[in-house]
Length: 382
Ligand SMILES: [Cu+2]
Image 1 (cartoon, rainbow, N blue to C red):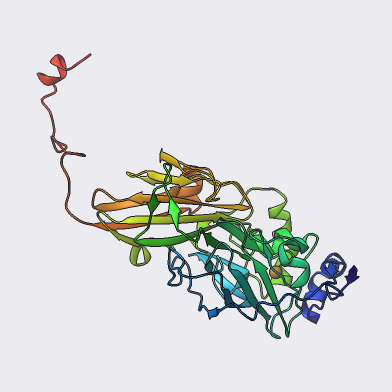
Image 2 (cartoon, rainbow, N blue to C red; image 1 turned 90 degrees about the vertical axis):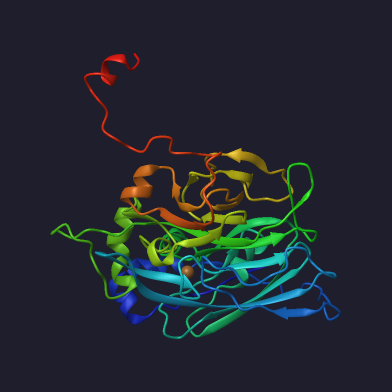
């Protein structure tokens, strides 16, 4: 039932970190060639092009017709990314972005992913879908060396938002994940989302926020170290990783990825679905000045959503979803409410909401003004 497969790693990698070869080389691969074939030839097939987060490919919220086979393609790219003004990471990515793109299907659909590991890469990769059943979430059927591709099909049987990530074995697993190899899939109920009473709800926009903890080492001069490739970065990065104190905690791959010109947008009155994933570490999203009207904190749509949350909890290795109707215009900060991580380490996004201010919900009755300290200061309470 199990066979073993040897890792293929570039010569530079071997020279830089010979121990990596040993740990990655003994990954168990499942042989399913004796299983009875399944005939899906009667099902319609749809090919979907994935978008770079925070955007999500066009999709129907309520399925029309029966289950289909939804075809996706992803290319694994090992490349350096800039994480902050003074920090770079030898990243490993699905489709070139951190996080990888979000996929959307409906319960009962089949997800068929072609995973490419281009020859210019140095390392073996795979994909573990938390939404899938069996074979390490697909990880043991998709282990691809540089220059190889694999096609995995799984049936999306459970509705919710789920993490996917690379898991090529041993210490490669956490390293690849904190190097950027994670993303999210949303499996919608066929009849769409429901509120706490079972009434249908829909969203006008959906944004995918993937949170990452990075562990970038500092050199003797105190500056962040920059490396020629991932292999060269491994030993120093591992030392920081094992201290469990991230150098950066960011949304969508870098400090400021979702602020300024790249801030999220919405209009007053719109329902916005925020899907938030963290493949490695706990998080606690909070929308400053707003709420989670309906929150699937654990991200699984067969559970009733919680209402009116101020902050919600994303367990490391999971995704959650929060639906909010924006009632006031302005700039909202969407943060990890560990405020050190939000402000000092990077986990802040902005949502710019257009519309007309409602003084009934909030009014600045007196704008900041100097007061008469001698007079008012004496009469004011206490
Ligand atoms: Cu990988």
